[in-house]
Amino acid sequence: MQDLAKKKINIKSPAKINLHLEVIGKRDDGFHELAMIMQNIDLADYLEFEINNDGLIKLESDCNDLTLSDDNLIVKSANLLRKKSNIGYGANIFLRKNIPIGAGLAGGSSNAAATLIGLNNLWDLKLDQETLCSLASTLGSDIPFFINGGIQLCFGRGEILEKLDSTLEYGVILLKNPNVSVSTAETYKKYSNRFCNQYLTDKEMIENIRKNLRDYGLNNLNFDNQHLSIKNDLQLVVENENDSVKLALYLLSKLENCLTFSMSGSGPTCFALFKDIETAKKELTANYKMFRNKGYDSWVCTFLEKGITFI
Image (tube, rainbow, N blue to C red):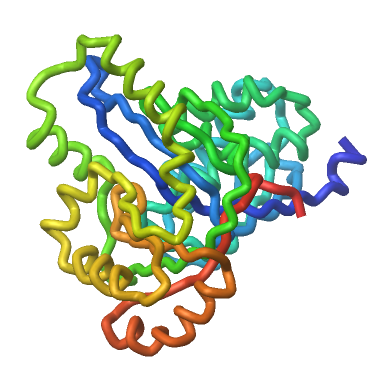
């Protein structure tokens, strides 16, 4: 314990965007069957972990909009890991928050996965990735993705993962109105009420959709300077109800060098892709004041080959 007590772990916990989000239908377990491509981006929160002597999980943050109690995903993840490992250690955790909340960028899910990875190291538990992914899947549908990160196919409710061998190097501009957030659960409920009038029973159809995404998903992202569309079924619901999303998509679509644009996850963050980071930076510089005057926070970032990393 003495050696462990001296350890301090610092972790970079990145956001994600959806390069494909297809809602196949409603499952009888209450979740939705999904076919997605998720990609980590270089907009990240940072977490610091150290052991405490009182066996408690203590979370602090520089973000005043977050609850720091037992319903926070970081605290839930830490407590789950303690219970699973039957240990008496506690941890002091500090979260430096950069990823906006309720934005469709899965910052909370990323933080949860970072907590599993960080405390596995801090407490010297030596749990393998399969075990961490299994724990992550009990906490939330997006969380297993972040255990490996990078770019992956995500099936089932998001927990069936297939790593993609890709090094896409697009630049990204993100737009989000800081006064607008969207409930993921409510968005799926609205989508389901409109488009999923019965439960899924056709397993062959599900496998065909998965195969199609495996075979052609990455091909669709090799834009070769052509304007292509990214599929996000949830956008059908959110764009019609949310003026912030509608305007963000319009503004991004008008950027001179934009290859494609979409909403991420359940929104309201929207993004545009550019051939490289330098092109994206130039576009943001040229349009930053206009975005701000329209009420948007904006970021420029790159794709990441890995997800959560020790720093």
